[in-house]
Length: 113
Length: 114
Image 1 (cartoon, chains in turn blue, purple):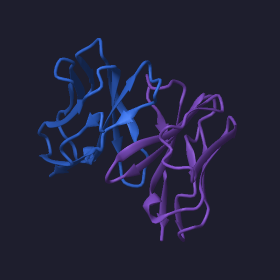
Image 2: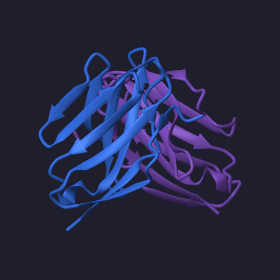
Image 3: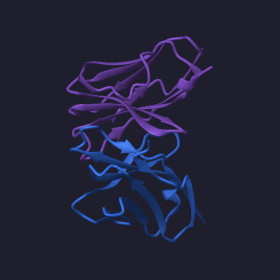
Image 4: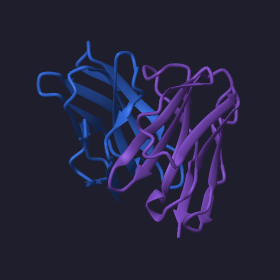
């Protein structure tokens, strides 16, 4: 059973526009959420995170929003750039990461010129 | 630091053969994780170590899979005997924290079992 779900396998966005990637989770014990970015033939790299005590965290063009009541988080990229084309993984941890990170299946973001 | 180093980058083997994947974590990181990526299941945690001790191996799919960490700078994931359904990309990651600060992943080993 997938505890972290990314229901959109792919997303196409025009360069300069906003990209919104979504993630849902089912485990109420998750208290820390992360987004990773992955290019082909490379390992995932950490992008941004948010603690469950916050509802928003911003880092440059990247903002993560957390809606705990809906068990939903999203990653906003504004403006989208060609180098943002990659697979984005949503991840979550509980108990300070006692069980490691649980990842979604990923969303392939394609930025079109 | 050169980051997390995995070898080999690609491995093609015949069904029934033994396969050993290797990982060198970042120096000073106390946690080491092995993940497997497939299209169907995404990134799955197989096992993780803390200070070279296996903590949780509940993600290891079968007894055919085993992992060791003989010292702080080296870990192996072994599959014996290998099967075609083991074909996947295997990632090693290390961290100074179990999950709060994120992991540093290696570039992965793409395993193909024919």
